[in-house]
Length: 499
Ligand code: GAP
Image (cartoon, rainbow, N blue to C red; front, side, top):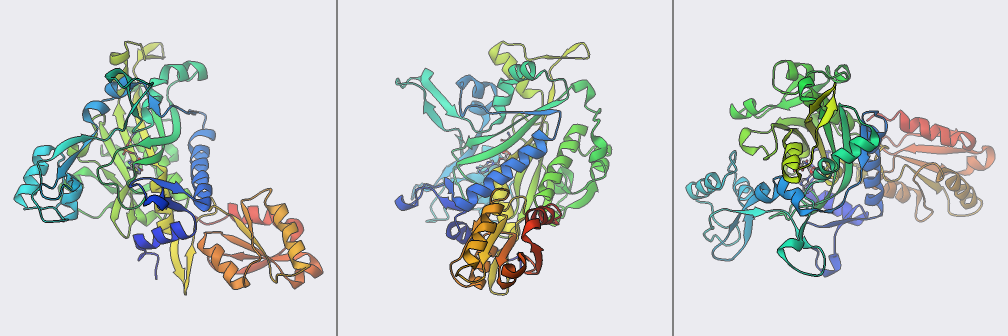
């Protein structure tokens, strides 16, 4: 099987069998839209988040991080517009009571949706004669359904005790804006980043972790003086990057194939309106390429006017091509203008302006917003393949949950003691794994399937000259290296790995 034929069932089966991801509460039949990460998944998730934080926060001088609350002051979501505008359209079967998200129902019936209003969705359902896919019954009119989970703060259940689980991490950044700016002495332009849980009561969670009700986001709000939107000192680091672009205009003309375009061209021709927006698209691609996602499976798609979120001036989604569901968003990169800061000033009555060049300004915001779970699903899909009869998960060492496995060739002394000695040395430096059960072939197969890039084997020659074999997962090639140099050799191999 080639890596292009992978099915969702393959990924789900591997994820559960090898302990990447499990539907939560499986012994009670699961809870739709909620997932737990198992031992390999928890490690891999941590690697993805750590690499993101390193790339977008630690190595930069202009971005700092925060860690905000999940349950936030209820006024936050009134100001942000989520109470009023954060909904999808629900249709209910009048015969069997099944509930569907209207646009998904149409999509599944092969009907393209470009306008997400109740009227447009109802018209499409009526004109195309769409019925309940479960029983063929008549469908209700689409009604808006707010996606925020409601909870109660304190013992009394009143309107005033109502609070929401955050549907995005972004708002905490706007709400904490003044405190962060003051405490970290930030000067424009700068970014504030956050990684954390988000909750959306999705009408139809589906495609495994792709559309979940609880998920993890990695977001940056990057603040720029509105008078200096064209002044991007970091531009040269991205200008010549080429991305696979599907603009709104191309979609309106019915063009389905993306076109390769440099970010310089995209900005100079006015396709991307804000230079900082183009810059952050470039940075986002650099990170996604760097963790090993194949370039031809990534494209950038501009939102049509009719699909823009209530806060957005212009939005581009980074989409990944999942062979089992087509192009789907894994990252959203929005130009939010000054919508959020202005709304919070209005609702809180507090001054959230900032002084830049002696003038008071309300900064404009570019927001790269990554979903950890979707990035993970893309990584697993991208890496999944078969070599002969085996499943091999060709993950980049950057995100692989285990970097190196250690095996004694034969399960007896002194091979075992020597192998344990090597394992004890390596696990101080790398996520390492030791195994002595089963034939060496089966042990290699098990770690190939878990995405372990390297396997070190202690054999007869080791006992004579203190060298071991290092086996490469994807080529199965083996090289010999002295144990004394092993740590450095592994570091070198990992850092030169071709993403
Ligand atoms: N603050 C901007 C924002 O929330 P979004 O496009 O709604 O934008 C950003 O979400 C990212 O969060 C998406 O690109 C996706 O990766 C992830 N995401 C959104 N909804 C999700 C869901 N139901 N399940 C898993 N990931 C989701």
